[in-house]
Amino acid sequence: MAAGLLVVLSGPSGVGKGTVCRQLFQLRPSLQLSLSLTTRPPRPEEKDGRDYEFTSPSRFQKLISGDAFLEWAVVYGHYYGTLKETVEANLDRGIDLLLEIDVQGALQVRRRLEEAVLVFLAPPSMEALRSRIAGRGTEDAVHLNRRLKAARQELSAYHLYDYLVINDGVEDAAASISAIIEAEKCKVKRGARPPAPGGEKR
Ligand code: 5GP
Image 1 (cartoon, protein in one colour):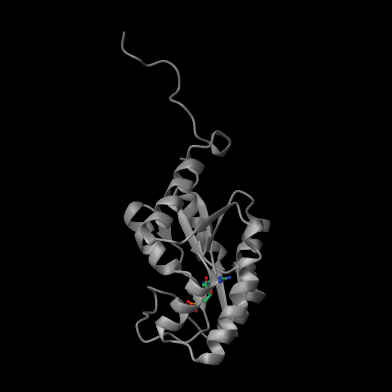
Image 2 (cartoon, protein in one colour; image 1 turned 45 degrees about the vertical axis):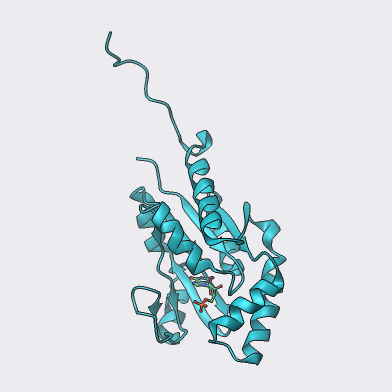
């Protein structure tokens, strides 16, 4: 069985990663979202075990010391990370996995797993990004500006990724990512093979 594909999706806060991912899972039901660990407190609509595995800073530190993470990073003052074991187990079982993580984490994945496919999701404009973050109503002015500053920094890293997708429409953006996945799975150097010769009926 071919190993699963590891797809890493990053993009600035507010670019619409969540919405695009939901649409992508409709197009590709076999794709699984990797559950990250975080020390950030849950938002009201979030559920432990569904959106994140919410955990304590002390447990997170222990996992770092035990080299349990494929990647981890501090984002807006909180720890986020992806466990090595979960990723390896899924890929070994042939499951395609999507990691929705920040740029620092994506670059760690690239260093450790060269075959990972890195996709950067960008907004059509900075103004569109600002209105999206402001429209979410979860950030005050200070945090909004902090997120926009971080977004500018994140955007400048797009050239380190394999693919750039502009989110100027959820359906188109999800379709583009799905097409990228399809193309990667057809790559000969990734293991795509024709049927073995012989066995045909005469
Ligand atoms: P939020 O707190 O808004 O859910 O996520 C904040 C940022 O953390 C987003 O950019 C998201 O992609 C990133 N993030 C979520 N999970 C992980 C993870 O496991 N590792 C890394 N490096 N970043 C993550």
